[in-house]
Length: 357
Image (cartoon, rainbow, N blue to C red; front, side):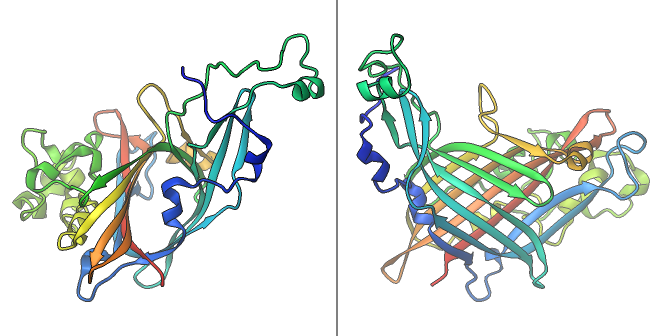
């Protein structure tokens, strides 16, 4: 691996913190709601165990909730770089505190969260010198200059997010940022039937369809979605299992919430955006994770989380305006489906935000 650069000097401790792209987040963000535009509310979909059910006796019964929400999301820069010492490698994290508060449209609180985003790209090489060898009793194993030739540490990810949720879960996600010209791209029609972003997971049956027969989410829902006889005629079928998600009044967003992000920016002129993609799980290993309190771990463990953010430069009245969109998906596991397999239940949140003046 290549050597790290630059070399550490005592002055580095007093250097201004580097927050990277996270610097743009500083401030308080709230819902951006143009008049008569209902696509700019936040929205969540949540599946929960049905009352009276448990995995030992009654499998796979769930309660579904989908509703609009308003949000206040505040980011605060932590002064100074946070120093991580690793011997020959040192890292100075740019820390950004966040606090998220979400209410339904009646002002009732439905979600609170706080934590840190970290910019991880500020690295130094710190070889041994005469003073460190003397202070830390490094002789005879260490000589002045040891550690300057590598191997250096090259981080796989530029950003991390850690957070605490009062249901009793603690999250750690890592990922990267990418700058892109133009507006974010979202799918249309049947291409939107992508299980990675649906409120219906493959383990829930995907409403009895297959990838070769997707539902067109930009058209009217299929007739069977509104067939009230299904619970009696097909009580354990996949269509009955997922019918209420497709029949919800907020369809198609109840099925694929990030389509609301697409529709919110449909008529906007977006010059560029930075895309941040974070996850608790990456190819080759977790690189993050989730811890749950015993009750949650026993009944409805949160096992994985994905988060996508778009920091967008919108052109309005010949001026640049920052806009933040996000989609985050947490996967619950509770009870068993009728096939005996463990079911993964997506909990999805999306919103479009602008900074408070």
